Image 1 (cartoon, helix red, strand yellow):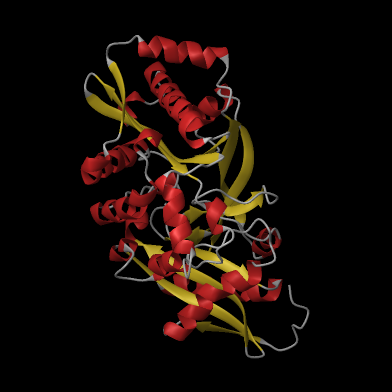
Image 2 (cartoon, rainbow, N blue to C red; image 1 turned 180 degrees about the vertical axis):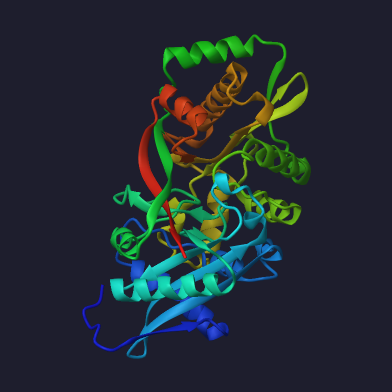
Length: 388
């Protein structure tokens, strides 16, 4: 963090390609010294931020800001409003009047606070009465500020930030709204006897079928799974439905890192009612790539993806149809999917550890499942809010 903060800070909106490049590059410059920071692929970052590429912009609008002092960039932030989030019931975390901010990076507290003020002003002038953040950019991307678990690099699709940001955000008047938990579990030797008994009983139940996904029918499978996701998560705090074009976009992005034996769909009486997605931890490669696939990283990535060996596998998404939630059947299906994927993961991917998250701190069903397989919380993310 820099010591030469003499001049005044000016906040400017990002208005052209050069500004946007500065917005993107700043994260790499500020985090380069952090051994646990995984540089995202720059193409992915531009894809997230660009209307026309990211279908979120079909129902949302965003403004990016830069902080400058003495001619150099000292920070960045995004402010955004999502029409689908505004349409959610207020008691579920989003709702009318709630705008968001995210993608905060700053060299010093003064820059961070000036950026937060700019984001709040932008939201306020558009009729928002509450700011909820950080989200980059939607709840489905990287929600929350890391507040515990700074010592290890995050796995695929999890964020990482400076430990200083928490104090700066709380100093700007933000209060915690919700915590998101990420769990780690050793998987090489299997799960406790209780879990194995539940799985064995499930395997004898003729009504239950746990199947792998069929990559030849990838689009149909993605649509099925994301439809289940929209149903399963619809009562969760912070939920915003995924649109058809977002489902197609997510499917396309995940296609290269999806392996049939790492994704399961559970059927009850022939009807798909639950799913679990597991991804190899591509971050173990990205951590050395500095955000670029050129010149040789592309080949390394493709070679690895042919048959990835991944010590850690991440479960980013899992869900059980709403009508079954809080039933014994729901936990049976969850344990069966977890155990079936665990067997394949250990045998075929040399996996030693599972990373499960994020899970809402008040999601009793998922937290109970994590406890039963003896998973431990290894990262905590916090989402904050403030009245405008």
